[in-house]
Length: 408
Image (cartoon, rainbow, N blue to C red; front, side, top):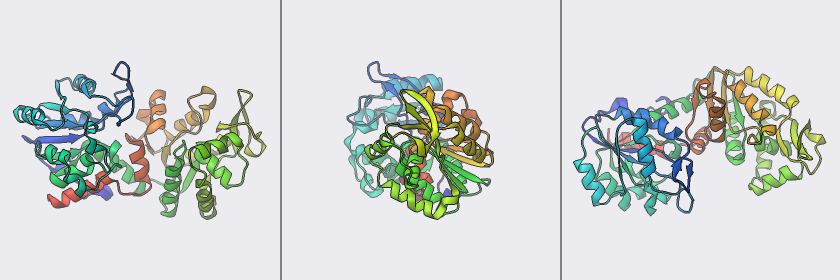
């Protein structure tokens, strides 16, 4: 598994006849009133791993949302949807580790697929704990009694230090599922062996993460260029001392990213020739799209997209890159008048020899466009993916490495 070769996968372990505790991420958009799952993409991504466990007894551990949210609900509908996709019954247990769950799993047959209740219904799963602390929780001690081996396939939660992610590998032999392996291999390739030149396109509203990624990939020679779009571009424009207008500055302040302007300024002082920030933008003026140079924008108009002139050098850069990592939209893509930049960048990025998409909104737009098959890899975990790209060791991966050493 590339730079994470210490992690074991399904090809390294025989799970036949074993009871497998499988952590997946089925957290999906739901209609809270009807309890209907609106998008089953995450289910489909995990099917390869679940099908590969047909000679084991598979106990699925997953979550939906978090306490306090409207879509924090039981997993009964999730079990039904998985059953439809698998083409075989998935037994839902409205219990996590009580005597009912313990007895049910004991009596189940090899080849059975069982889904436990939303693991975040247990308060301990919502705590941020180390592996050692997690191993001592009632949740982990009881879950571990029900399985022989733990498989983590939940890349979407790999950046969270929660008991089922970091605690189960402390007490059971733990390996990566097929989705986790694919994510780690493709994202690792960005750091090692990606065809050059490499361009990172960083946009959207998660500015602090994007700035961290930009700094990491430029300092370590991973990227040849960083193209800033969306609110990330506005931060860099402000760092270049452009007046980006009150609405755009207010949004930066509202998101809590004013301090990122100084960080962007310091990155520009080191890597000005490697950071591309389009200065020709699209604003909303009197309710309509108007394109102009950033220095000419009226103080009361928000920047909502790239302008056509600003887009041309961006597309040239993307088309001349052999590797493209795309994370975040270029503007307010939800409004058709301001989706132009995002759509054109996606079309250009899809032509790259090696292309990686950081999940989230960008992945949703790509799927809507029908472009998903044109990209090498579309990550299933927005937060986990971007944290991986900042060079941080994700808690789930560290836990799997540790388990491989302990249960070698």
